[in-house]
Length: 196
Image (cartoon, rainbow, N blue to C red; front, top):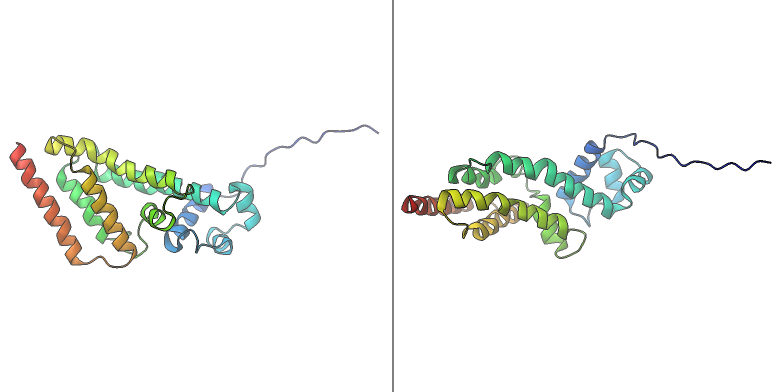
């Protein structure tokens, strides 16, 4: 009898990975990491648990990939649209005011901010959360340098932005908070005028 070696050939995935990651991303955004069950992920993604585990290892692996997907498909394009290379304070104010509009006014908040508040310093979330927060600061610095001649307000604006997202998640955003955005940007515009 001749022994034969079986060659292991990786099968191509038979699902649309972008669609699966988008579905998982929305599930984690709505429910949070701990409240999102594997059964819920099966229902949301349309895949069986075995397929999810084969593709992503476990729920944590899927979460990491979903958070990366959120950064690439939602956060990055959003920041590029509002705070691109020619952005002004008015464009940046538009980014902040967009938190009061769909899709971020739905009470589910932002996956980056939600993960920071739910998981804290858990290594599961830290890289993605840090990347999301750094992406905002990375876009703010050149714009503020150009508009105000300084980046000293970056930290304040990052805090304001993510604070608004926490309130959004809690369903507590009001017109008073919208007015706070207007007030902050009126202050920044006054500084811009002084600097010119």
